[in-house]
Every structure is written in C-alpha cells, then in structure tokens.
Image 1 (tube, helix red, strand yellow):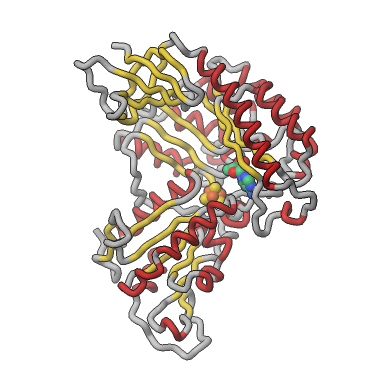
Image 2: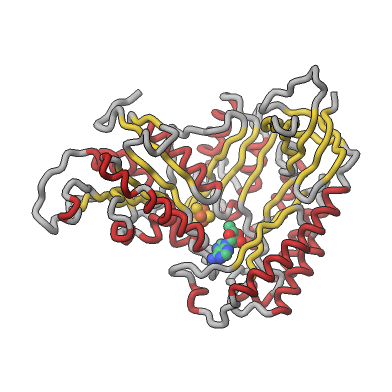
Length: 471
Ligand code: 5AD
Ligand code: SF4
C-alpha cells in the first residue's frame, strides 16, 4: 500500500442522499485508503470527519448543517472536518462562514483531486502574507490560526469522470458502476445540474472492463448509475466499431459471464428509447424493472417543470414496457405542490397513477432550491396543501400496490438472498423486479447470502411479499 504524507490517519465518512452519492463515497473511501488512511466507525476515533452531502430538498441540506453544528466541539481535539458532495458544491466557501470548523469543501466533480487536497490539508502551516492565495489553499481567519481551508469547486465544466481503481465496495455481491455523471436537462425545480455539473459519459470499454473485473471478484449483480442514464453517449470513436448506445451497453453488461442481474437508474422519459425494452426482452440478465420518474400527470405542470415530454409521450413509453415479453415492474417519482399546481392538475396525477399501475412511487413535496428556474415562479402552493396532496397521493398509491402485490401470491419467484431478519426468523430476498420477498426456509436449509433461490409467494403487503423457499 502506498504511504504518503497522510499515513496513519483515520477517517470517518457519513453519506447522505442518492445512490450516486453512496457510490461516490465508495470511491472516496477507496482513494483515502490508498492514500494511507484507515476508515473508522465513529467520529470519536477519527482524525478526519467527512460528510458526503445532498441538497436535493431543503430538509436534506439542513441535516448536514445540524450534524456539523453537533460536532463543532470536537475541533479542540485536533480533528478536521470536510464537506463533500452536493451541499459543498452548492454552498461553496459560504460553508466556512456557517461552519468555521470545516477545513475542506469539495464538490463531486473535483474528487479526482482529492489526493492532492489531502496532502495540502496535512501540510505543516507555512505563514503567508494575508491575502496571498497559493493554489487551493487559502488563509484561515486569524481566530483559527491553525485552520487550513481547501476547496475543490471549480471543475463542474470538466469532461473527466471520477475514474478510480480504488473503489471500496461495501457489498460483495451487488455493486454500482457509474456510466454517466452530471446532468444537462435543467428541470425547473432541480439543483442537480448546478451541483453535479454537465453530462459526461465514460467509455463503454471502461464500463465493461469494470463489470468484468467485478464478475471476476464474485459479484453477480450490477447497477448502472447516472443522473440520467438514457442520455449516455459513448465517447469511444465512431469508427472504432466499439461505440455503444445505452441499450447496447446495457445488453453487453448483461452478457458479461457471471453477471446474473443488471439494473439501471435513473431514466429520464424524454431519452427513454424503445431499444431499452428490446434489450430487456433479449437479455435475461437485465432486470424486469424500470424506474421512470414522471413528476406530474398534468401537461401544464410538466411544461412548467421543463420536463420536455407530455403525458401522452410518457404513456407511450409505458405502453412499450407493457408490451414487453416479461412483465416489467415500473416505479416513479412524483412531486406535489409545484408552483401553480391546481386541484385539477393534481387530479390528473392521481389518474396517471391508476393508468400506469406503478409498483412503487417516491413522493415529494416541492422544495424551492437555490439557482433553479422555478424559484422565480409565483403562485406557491401553501405547505399545508402540499402535505394534504402528498397524503392523498400516498393513500391512492398504497391501494394500487395492495392490488398489484396480491397477484403474485401462489407464484414462484427467484430472489437474491440479501440477509436474515432474526427477530422474524425470516430471510430477506429481492426479486428481479426489485421487490422485497421475505421468506422462510426449512430448518435443514441455510441459504447463503448473495445466492439465488426460488421462493413461492404466500402473502402480500403494500410494499413486500412473504413466501417459502422452494427446495
Ligand atoms: N423538490 C421536491 N422534489 C424534488 N426532486 C428533485 N428536486 C426536487 C425539489 N426541488 C425529486 C424528483 C426527483 C427525485 C430524485 O427528487 O422527484 O426525481
Ligand atoms: Fe442529492 Fe441530487 Fe446530489 Fe444525489 S445528485 S446527492 S439526490 S442533490
């Protein structure tokens, strides 16, 4: 292992937010370990405390500042604090004002530079004339003469991805692979294009090499990640014969020897092509589940959200999936209370839930975010009304799920064994459709975590199934 200036240091990392953040953290952990750091389980044991943050909604952002405030007193013990991810990118150096004990602020597009920033963070203090700025390192206010402040915020326009060979994956059976970073869509409510920068895709060859490497290590499930996987554009040269569309890449990952399941998230309806459904039809390893966030069922609201598709176009894509050879499970995200959303608009969203028949919907109250175009819109929906709509929506979706999950009772379904719930004396399984199917096994059988077994569903709930292992 490489030993650098930062050898024998310990770090603690806490992650907020989406799967992209979870996977970024795996890469950050791998990078830090390579730099000679040791990961520890508690803040008390750590020299360096890192938060990988989310700013998608106001609540997520507040959580980070509460956590930072809680740990302020630990500064006296010589610990250092770093803020990574979306709040870091969004708030930038303002974080140093709000939380003066922070010494590192780094957005996701700058993680490639982490080793260099860590070296600077650990460098002995060199007194410099006030105002002089030596690269990434700025002078701290005189009150905290020992504080160094490092920022990595300027790379949102980069063409490079955070490619690292040092990913520390936390699950030995199922792992993420990033295929595209950033987002160019600029939906009116969304902070992501500002926090994660412009779209940049990895070459299909590099994605496939990582998939093969994971298969060799014993992984059987891969989840391809991107803010918008459907706008994947292979940077491989057009004349190389190796350039792939997203659907071709998906199929190729599904054909890697040893890989039994491939998932992908998140899809944007505008770029969701029929070729993806054809790939799912053709390659059994591609999971029969698509997460296709609709956000609203009203054309008026979709237009104000700048989603770039109509309700009819969205339903056309649902139609492609419904005519697939295998039943494809469809899930979605919905925002209620976008500025100007009327009772009629909301009713159209409820109607869409009935029409599609989702297996799961993540529902959110609209939360105004810095820099986003919808900040300028009038006609805010009062919070109380947003809450009411959220409840109505969740209740309707629950009814839909109760009916949908019921129809699996009596069928045999393959699950990957994910773990054991001792309290309930049940095994935890996941189906290709991404449903939780908990099950019991005969006393003489102990299913191995990460293996695949057949389970007969015997009961259903709004969010899960229960069954018995078929032996
Ligand atoms: N307010 C509420 N929900 C939001 N989402 C994204 N931005 C906002 C916002 N400003 C939701 C969308 C997206 C999911 C990840 O989070 O539904 O698909
Ligand atoms: Fe949160 Fe979006 Fe950043 Fe993911 S990309 S951490 S959801 S703000």
